[in-house]
Length: 181
Image 1 (cartoon, helix red, strand yellow):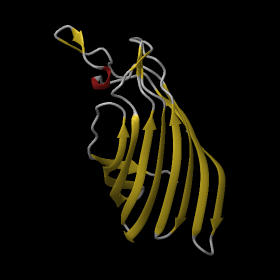
Image 2 (cartoon, helix red, strand yellow; image 1 turned 90 degrees about the vertical axis):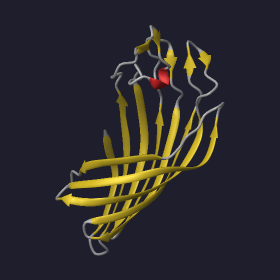
Image 3 (cartoon, rainbow, N blue to C red; image 1 turned 60 degrees about the vertical axis):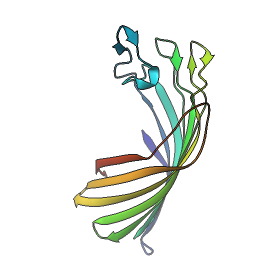
Image 4 (spheres, rainbow, N blue to C red; image 1 turned 180 degrees about the vertical axis):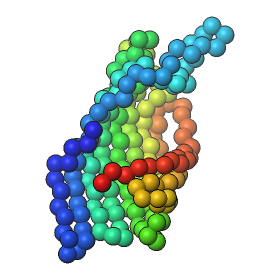
């Protein structure tokens, strides 16, 4: 859920700003009891977490065509699932600048970050979990029709300080978005 707590529109300058609070939770959906040869696979390989994931965030947006700037920070906490596993609490942040090259086409560049605490399993700290990741996020968005946008972005890690033995690589996201105005 997103609640806009402040908005400012300047029609003469074609500028709009807003500040919002974002709050919600992920549900304990998806299987988290997959087994191979009678043994439950690692929690991080399960389809679901088996736990609730409430979050609270603050978002700011500045729009003055053809430029858009979005800044956000969100905190997320995970409850313990029925197997005693709890994902570490995390803080996520982003800064994205988007430029509309043509009426239906926009390019963006962002910096996203995440810091997560260690996970725990039945109260025991899991050494190869959590840490810091910073990624550069170039992207492209195309207005397919009306309120429908097709977008693609790549998250490319450029700085990490992960706990234990972990690796992180690029992530590609492609999606179709419907904007409500």
